[in-house]
Image (cartoon, helix red, strand yellow):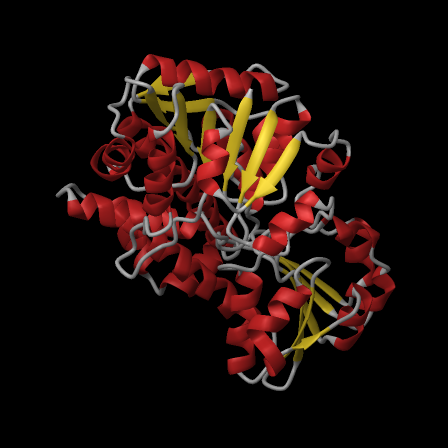
Length: 453
């Protein structure tokens, strides 16, 4: 098929590369002329595994990049729109890039003799398609949906560092179709690209919009529930959060159910907040997403208290991990960056290490912390080191560098060699056995008997 992809960020470029890799003729569009020129000159710079490899093996002309959106639409049958929808000051999603794109797409469709299908991938608030996006396309094209113009809301469920995986082996395909023809077209494109047999969920655009944003709220709820268990198991003698969550997983599932640090990143925090303000706007209870957001912030302060309690002013604290998750340089809402700021403010000397995100962290934190060239250098310089994300590189570190270091492992992920080599090992979420009755008496100040009377 002739397919245009509008917006060449991490998701858009990955989508374009995957579509071209399976034989579609792809026109990739972005306003960044340097990015466009680089793609046409076969210069690729993507942190996503699998993208550069796919682009490298393409035959010349299979993927053509340009800045001319209207021309790309005229040269294609289907357009996937993956432009940013940034959060606005009220917590919603701004359509300041998406609406002009739809206006240009509609105007280009107006001059076409053939039918055209538009699939919006960008995350939007529920109701955006029906109230704003579709009317813009219809007005600019002079066509009605179903009359030469077809529309789907077709979001992706991906994680940075694994975007290709999310594209080619999705958990399911979500298609919010305005008409059956639109859904058939978009589904056929996905079926040509996926290597598994994912379930299909076809529904109206507004149902798909609710599904997309609700998915991230549910995932943040699971993370927060596991983190609640993490904190209580960090306090109660003889408790291990991994044993608790493993037992619960028999009924609740394992996905996003690991007690550790607060969630972060570019999607979960903002999507949860956006769902909350949408619920407020339509007059329905918004307590749940608000509570999740509040708990996530409180959990970050809980972990901070544990680190502060293990250190003293003037101590050097090493942070092993500055990105928001392994396998990506993205530091947006990264707990490691937040922790670095807080510790530096509380008179700790902070030194950070990350296999991918050091340069990004340096741009945000500047000289408020120091940056280690290696994990070993970070460990040698630190009185206490904190594992903030479970990077795979932790398995290959020379842990003899931690001989004088106390290791605080928020993920309980360090290998036995690390545990044996360090001065002291503290696994948050896991406590050694002790007398629970004595602990309760000391901790609750006599309140526990009142709870059991």
